Length: 111
Image (cartoon, rainbow, N blue to C red; front, side, top):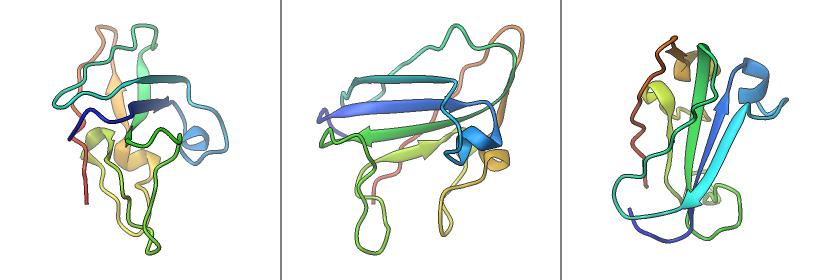
């Protein structure tokens, strides 16, 4: 939506990682730019992954929310998974990466 802050991307290869009980298997942080931001993760093995993207506009490293829990910054999930009274489950966001890799687009939602 704008060039403030950074775009944070985390890639998870398990339900444990997705739920915060384990670290992301890959992550990147890049400066935000208005429009599309392209990132590559060339070292991912074939498998099942969930991807979380966040536009950290104020640079505090967290997704800021209103008192009602509604995100104040942009966010998105692989597979078009949506928030419904909390973040989607790993199964909803999971995508498959084959031997030849994959290309996905994750639009960010801003409230």
